[in-house]
Length: 92
Image (tube, rainbow, N blue to C red):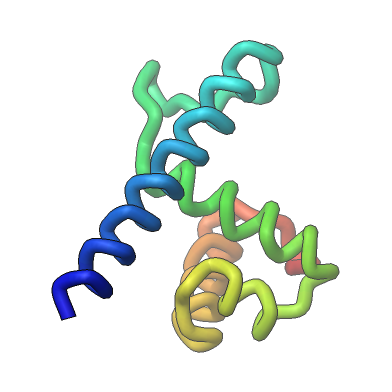
């Protein structure tokens, strides 16, 4: 049992390190800022991750949700909230 937990922990650390490298790469390429009032917010990162994943899967919500590690209903709820606030494109 402990080996499984250790493996999961290691996988999570590797994923965070990978995302950190991607974020640093985005900053170095002077891409669209991901900051809010000078600070990166978790909500901004989450929203951009969801949008990018949906776009990479051609808008397929089931596949996108699986890739993100969330449920399809959770994905739909987030999209409805963001759309009503005008934070994501309506076509998603």
